[in-house]
Image 1 (cartoon, one colour):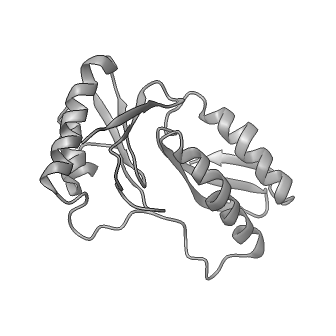
Image 2 (cartoon, helix red, strand yellow; image 1 turned 45 degrees about the horizontal axis):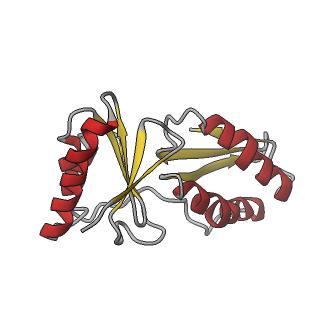
Length: 185
């Protein structure tokens, strides 16, 4: 098994590509703490590595965020944990725990449906390239503010504010005139 690594815009996060499906298309899992990782054997193993502070599973990648140390010292242990997990054929997630996703479309207004569609088709695929994910959390029609939750390498990334303002906000305002701003939650 050959696992590739890619840097992300967040210097504290490295993206690991095991060359196989991790969560599958459209599915993600974010483990912000060691306690949250209890439902995943791989996330638990990764948190056993000193200085691992966050683990994120995407469709075909794993993003690991460090709290300290240098990648040259952390990377071998992380690669070993990922390789051992996949070669042993362990489940990625135990118990039937559901990951938070977008709210139900049944009650969405036309504006909210348009915002969600733009996020799903344009924003999420681009952000996944950098080892992260962005989830729609709400739209305040009175103020025109879209609320987004940033996960994976996006959480705590130094360039996340620029991504929100110059990228996502400008794009949403262009296509959806009712949008006035974008905020992270």
